[in-house]
Image 1 (cartoon, rainbow, N blue to C red):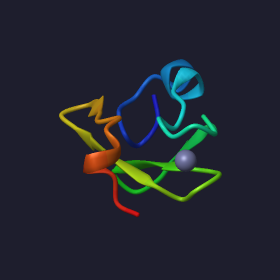
Image 2 (image 1 turned 180 degrees about the vertical axis):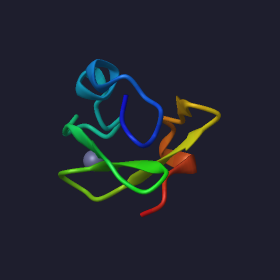
Image 3 (image 1 turned 60 degrees about the horizontal axis):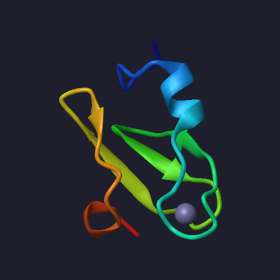
Image 4 (image 1 turned 180 degrees about the horizontal axis):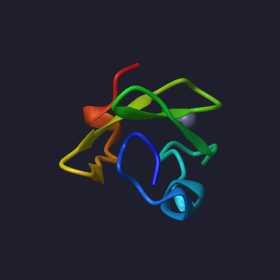
Length: 56
Ligand SMILES: [Zn+2]
């Protein structure tokens, strides 16, 4: 478990929903795309992988 309360294996499997499908790295309450910098919020221990919800 990391600070986000997410399984590191899950974080490894998650990819940015944009066409580049880059890996994500845990940030402060969010998962940040290593390619485009979009930050996806983690709510109640669940990552919200919607580009509309991402902070750019
Ligand atoms: Zn991205």
